[in-house]
Structures are given as C-alpha cells and as structure tokens.
Image (cartoon, rainbow, N blue to C red):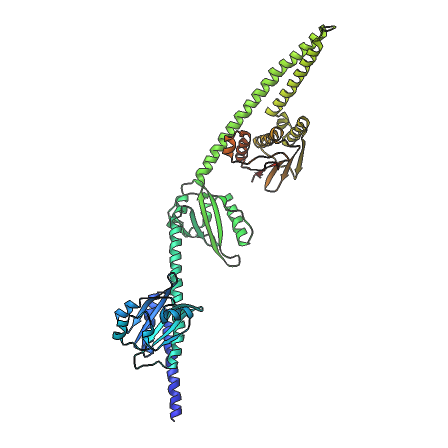
Length: 521
C-alpha cells in the first residue's frame, strides 16, 4: 500500500504545483504594470514554495543594471543594499548575463551583500533563476532558503517554469509601457503639429483630426470628428480625392504632395499641399492619413505675381509694338527715302566725279545693312508670323532666320498632336524660345542647336539643346544679379504659365533648356 500512497502523494503534489503555476501565470498576466506583476508574483511564489525570502529583479536595458522591484522576507537594509546590481556582477549579474540558473549555497560569495548584513540576516542558500522572454533575459528571480531548508528538485523545476511566465509578463508590461509612451509622444506631435493632420476610415468618415487641420477649415476639432470628408470637397476636389484613393488602394504610384482644395465653414476655399498615406495595406486597408500644409496665402501671392507679370508682359509687348511701329513707319521709311536720294544723286553724275562711285556704293551697302538689321529687330520685337499664322509657323521662321544669319545648324522637331495654347501662352513660350536661341547665337559659340517639341498626354515638353561652351548654373536671383536678366526672365515667364523650366549646362559641354507646360484640365 505504501508505494501506491507515495505515488498518489506524488500525483497530488504535481497537481498542486501545476495549479500553482497556472494561478501565478493567470495572476501576472492580468496586469500591464511591471511593479504590479513582480509584487503579485512574489506573493504567489511564497504561498506555493517554502522559502524564507524572495527577490525579484528587472533588467534596465539602458543602464544594464538589475533593479530590485519586489522582495519578501528580507530586511529593508538588505533591500537597500541590493536595490541595483550591475549586469555581470555577483551571482545575480552572472545569471542575467548567461541566462542559466545558479545555486549559491553560501551567500558570502555574493559581493553585493555587505558583510555586516551577512551576520544579521542569517541567510541560507540562494536559488537564482533567469526571467526570460523570447530567449532574452529580462530579470532574475532569487528564492532564499533558510539555514536548515533546501528546495526539492520538483520545486526547483517549478521555479524555472515560473521564471518563464514572469519573464513574458514583464516583457509584455514593458512593451505596453513603451507603446503608451510612443502613443503619448505621437499624440503630442499630432496635436501640436503646425501641419494639419486627419485620419479617415475607408468610407471617408473622419476618425481623428488635430487643431491645425480644424483651423484650416474654420471648425472646432469636435465638430469634424464623425463627419464625412466629402462635405469639405468641391466636385473637382472630390474627383481628385477619388483618384488618389483608387491609386493607393491598388498600389499604384502617385505624385505627392499634391495640391487640393478644401471648402471652409465660412464658404472660403483653402488651398493645401496634401500628402495621403494608406493605413494598413492594400489587402487589408483600415483608412487614410492626410498631412496638409495651408498654401492659401502662397496661392494668393502667386496669383498676384502672375497678374503683375501679366501686366508687365503686356506693357513690354505694347512697348515692343510701339517701337516696332516707329522703326517701320519712321526710321525704315526715312532710310528708304535716303537710299532713293542716293540713287537719284548717282544718276545725275554721268560720269561721276573721281572717287564718288566708291563712296556712293559704300553708302548703298551701309544703308542696305542697316535696313536688314532694323527689319530683324522689328521681327524680334513684333513677330507678325506668330500673330497671323500661329505658334509653330512662327518658330519655324525664327529657326530659319537663325540658321541664315548665324550659320548655326538649327532644326525644329515636333512630335505628337499639337495642343492649343492661349494667345498669351503662345507669346510667352515663343519669347522663352526666342531668348534661348538669342543666347545660343550671342554667347554659346555653338555650331548646332535643336528645338524639340513633344505633345504628351499631360504636358507639352520643349527642349532647346546646343553643343556650345555652356556656363556655370546659378539660381534665378543670382542670374539677375550677375546680369543674366534674359535667363531670369525666362524663369519668370515659365512660372507665369505654371510651367517648369530647367537648365542643364556644364562649361564646355553644351546646354539643354527644358520647359514642361502642364496640359489644361
């Protein structure tokens, strides 16, 4: 009967240990606070395993110190002495470093315990176990047996399992705390950000919004939460929003940030530069995050600048036309009359006085040269071909004249279906190309220049490529400051028509000027 009874006692003890392990696991996993986890674990272990004391250390990742977070059965003096243990120092530090349990039968071998306390504490053996989570040590568990006590092998094995449970609970609590801190920092950044930020679900309902975004639209934060974003979008803005949504949900590329319009509470239209991100992934989307920067003032300034440039451009063209008319109606007519007088004077002298013929011929040549130059100036000031025949014929004539007068091998190459521009756009683009070709003729020492025009789906691209000397590139203001007003004017004209002008030039390696003009919606 005794063997059977012993077997029953063993089963009962095992059941008790399993129940105790389950109770400890349940208790420590009910909290996400490290101190609460360690204190609850200490109470449950003392109830389950016969011991005189217990110490629970948690490893601080930043300082590499074991910090005493809970203890039972030891004096406050000993707890104070053991409040911090360096990783690798003494049996506790070694267990934390190696991740293996250690039995210290003589506490005097622990250098972290002052000798005076060894005499007063009457410490027995120390059973030190690592607390692990995902194979990483997060702390140590130390059970102190009395001088006359020794833990059984089953109790030691149980402590190993308990150490794993506590380790996982501690790591979970620490991760939760880090997550809370990260969320707090994100919330502070979110609420205090100068840029407007809002999150909407996949149906377009605003889930959260910061003060900056609410202020852009003239609302309070609470007024916007739960609203459909469609309420704040005009029909064209809604079309753009749907396009962006479709591309993000289908993993298609999208140019960001992009310009969008928002309808404000007071009826205004606010312009923003918007960056939109998909929350979740393409297969499991949960919403969209928007970051917006208010550019309404910049748009107004740009519009004022465009108006100003338009007025300046109109004034320049009027002045060009006036000068061209005066040159044509007065100066050229006067030179033609003078040429006729020279012819009449030459006809009266038969034979002409000695040396007069050479003088008269020279005068005729000078007059003809002046007339040619004046007609070219008039052409540059007021291109009649542009006015009467249109953009491409005017460019063809401009390039033909460049080739005839300078000997530069100039060519025009057009691809795609020509896109109609307004009269003012045609004039400004013509002036940009005219200025570029004038620079080629005057400064580049090029032998070849190509003007390439591509009519693409979303834009018109114009490139002027020469094989001249090139130059060192500068910003627009630097160009103006260095006397290159022609180049600075090209940038201003491009900006007015919402084009993008780029100049790529390297000394002794030629120049490429590229102008992209967006297609009208």
